[in-house]
Length: 130
Image (cartoon, rainbow, N blue to C red; front, side, top):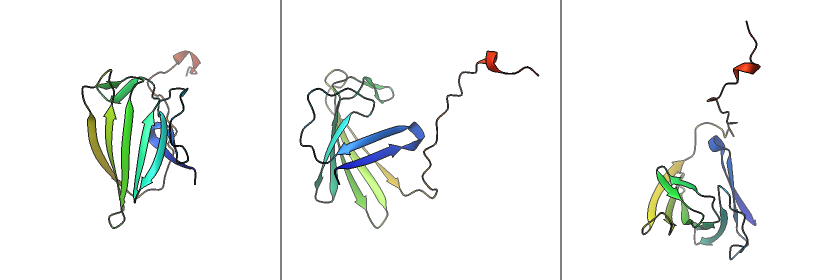
């Protein structure tokens, strides 16, 4: 009722959209997912997010802690397709607005949070000799 939680299972990222807040707090602790507040505009969920850690908006496009993103989520109930339109602004790295959209469909497989393991580093000192 007061929050919507989005879980990006493959990336281990959880995002909370606060539906009971009108403004972002002044003293936000920056995070990878930022701080999101949302409201309904008819059947469209509008999400306003700030408070990001510096990183990459979409490789190779960098973002600073000044990144501000507004997303609009709408569902096509016939196709069971969720479309997200977004507008990003960042005075440090972007000249103008960064816009786009994507659409996802219901998966054939059940949700799997997919525990991520870093397979790039092998500590050979901890492996047993054969």
